[in-house]
Amino acid sequence: MNSTDNIRPRGIARFIGRGALFTFGAIFICELFFRLVLPACNFPYAYTDPVTNILRYDEKRLTEGVYTIGRYAQQRGKWRVNNYGWISAVDYQRKELRDKPLVAVIGDSYLEAFHVDVDKSVAALLRDSLHGEYDVYQFGISGASLATYLQITRWVDSEFEPDIIVYLVDDDDLEQSMTL
Image 1 (cartoon, one colour):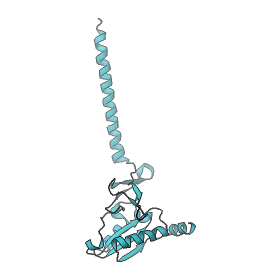
Image 2 (spheres, one colour; image 1 turned 45 degrees about the vertical axis):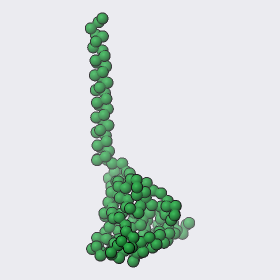
Image 3 (cartoon, rainbow, N blue to C red; image 1 turned 90 degrees about the vertical axis):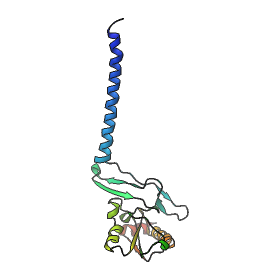
Image 4 (cartoon, rainbow, N blue to C red; image 1 turned 30 degrees about the vertical axis):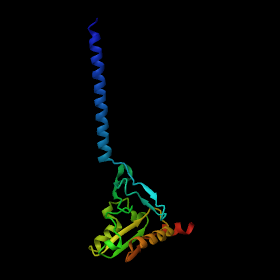
């Protein structure tokens, strides 16, 4: 038996161990980099409610995340899906559980506001400017047409009975509605 025969198995085991350690270390560093420095965009799970035929987000699955756009994820917005499946910083309550008048804001992606933090959306800013005297609920869906606004309005009226309804309408909404 040669003395080099005993060295080879230990050298191979050492090589495999170092390779595994390097691989796990590289995966760990990449995970930290892509989670903290350059996060990928994550998006909530959407579904069309079979009863109302309105697109909403699944409030039982992924309910918080970060939406990123731009080169190197330069623009980031934290989003949250509330208890009724809408992007909002607050949970919604039916009329009998509220003690303040309700302002319902209905719109498209500007109101949905994935591109900003959920606490800096149009509805959140309106809620802050009203100094807590009103509840403000936002109902925004990207790409919504005026027909979708009507459908959401009917559902919001039956579900929450708002005191005021505000529509966020821009020229794209009008143009899209005219071409349907």
